[in-house]
Length: 344
Image 1 (cartoon, rainbow, N blue to C red):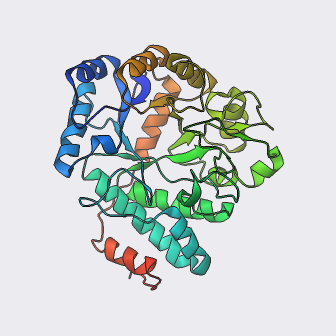
Image 2: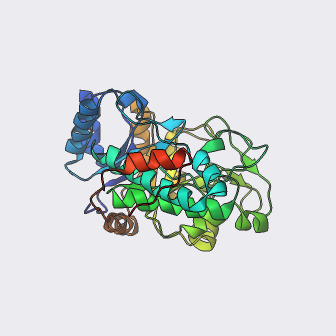
């Protein structure tokens, strides 16, 4: 993608299976960096391909970002009968405890299969892997979406999933940086506040993200970390973004906010968009397809910065497509059943 600073620093959802005339006009005028799909936008492979083509036609870019949350397990916008049921990260994390080699191979295979399934539809960005850790007593919004409670395992398996996605021509987005795992509330509904010390956070929650700081893109957490900034969640905290995400973690890729319409954030949609951009998010994400909300976000978020455009270009250069072997699904099924197998 030849991104430039003319594109709106936003990623938008849409309302249904096809675009309305109003949506087409809006997207043509707003020229967002990309779009995100949800279950409401998905009926069949041909329909998804047509919708993706419609969206890209609005902005005149054949490689515009099309995002989806296709993690596996309970977070999968593509589902049977047309698409495979991919394993949850937690299941692969359990396999790692028993057989690390098998788990690593399974993760790479799963990443490659996800990429093949998405790219066949024209989708080129997957909002995965989840690098958050799983903590006892925390809200189950993360739960088995995480690889587990061990930061080293999460980083190791997270990298393997990214490698599989990149080899299949799909960009991964690591999330929810710098860590959502300890949250006692679902940030879709309320603002989580974490009171853990900074030293502990650096050793645990932040560690998988630091291990994958070279990845192309990351999505922020709508979580307050009292030890760092007691007044604002990461998404709208200049302190968290500069000191932790860009600083301690060392992430210099494209930073995307989590969904601005989530209840963890306060203020109207324009205020939220402006706060996220001013705090250091390169791009803001708005998911629900509500037309008036999208207009408010577009008016407030501004254009992509030159720095962000360079990050987009670097991200695209990380794609290293290789032809699939053709037996990935069978090999993954064997590994997940507990039967060791090796390629070659």
